[in-house]
Length: 142
Ligand code: DQA
Image 1 (spheres, rainbow, N blue to C red):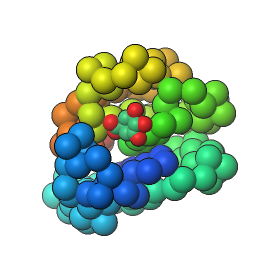
Image 2 (spheres, rainbow, N blue to C red; image 1 turned 90 degrees about the horizontal axis):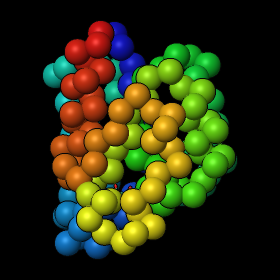
Image 3 (cartoon, rainbow, N blue to C red; image 1 turned 90 degrees about the vertical axis):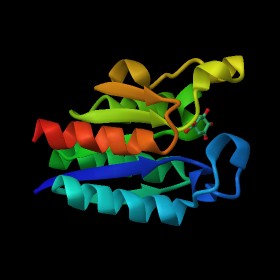
Image 4 (cartoon, rainbow, N blue to C red; image 1 turned 135 degrees about the vertical axis):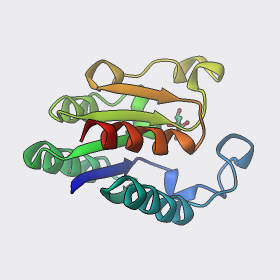
């Protein structure tokens, strides 16, 4: 069974409470449960993680690179400035960057991603459904 790690960066643990007009009312726990269900339907073994600690995210990316595990990542605020996260992302063979909100329709600083040049693809602005689309892509890849 294909394994996929869904990695979420800082403040995404606050989903449901955090700026609901932008990120919606679904909580992080509900999202995690939903994605495990999506994975089961698609024949994927999905593990969902969230951290506010950059070193922990980097360790998870190293683990995925080592084990050749596919990754769906929402790097959240790190997207826009973290060279350390970009340096870890580049080592992962199959990795899709997801943003819940349309970062191009918000503040200027959100328009630039230091991570995007190193990922397989980017899904932006489709809400939580962006994670499902990324999983669907990996399921189709086999
Ligand atoms: C985000 C967009 C980022 O700009 C922001 O810092 C986040 C969430 C999104 O999913 O829309 O934390 O990655």
